[in-house]
Image (spheres, rainbow, N blue to C red):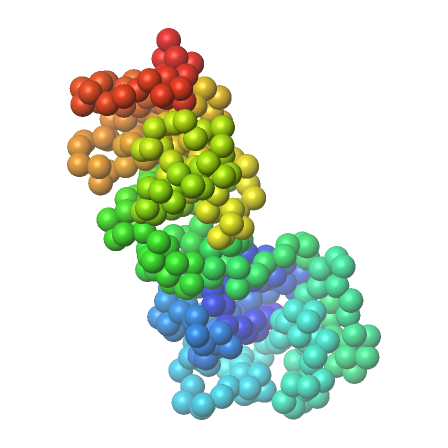
Length: 361
């Protein structure tokens, strides 16, 4: 049997890792074995071993020919070199064909690895490259490396940890958010009160489930928009107004309850580098709505109003959104209008008024 050793920090595991592993498993007709390192080079932001393992299990749970070996995690050595890992697998699988999977950047630096020549003698080195990457021909020849070419997906673990990139399996992102891992979640915990963050997580989960039930191309966008929709809420009102007046002056006349949605739309671009116009629109109008809303914006508006922690039984409204988000949005909108009128809230600001008129009249 062909077994492909794939080591790394996987802190966290992301789509680049998964695509690389799946391509290698297919090209070499074998099993890819993830071998997570015990110590991450990103010590100051690293997740615990337990969290990394949980995320890795979630990432490969439905993937054929992908598995995990905890050799390096269980090692008593202060430092585990790749030669140690290779010798372990040679002993564990003496009758199998072994491969060692690395990226093209690692291939270019392979001559500086400990006992690099011995590693190349013991098994086949396989390197994964992408269009636009230049490989070192001397190393390729010296260590008899085999090439696998894959998708040109750029993934930054650093950006993922800062919640500036979401190129990772959905379940891994959910785990990071739920357990408040890495710098991005630390930042959100600083910006939002515990109550607000709990609400935002619930909106994210509700929006994701609605988006998935309605077969959106990328339901993860709904989760992201839901998670960040209230990022401007706990900022002082005068700061909210200042940001609205500066970056969205056309809405400076809207009542102050809505300033946080415009402040939030600015903050996700400035602090987290968001560029997706659908996510930004959804955040910008999640409180008031407007007269021309895309489906993602409708889902976030509705999820904000009906997520389960709101304190009332919203199951019928959630199910209506799951069955048909376009029609469900109108049902939620009418319910919200009735609620606002019962509380004698002002619904005559131009955004809310036009929203109700467009979708309810």
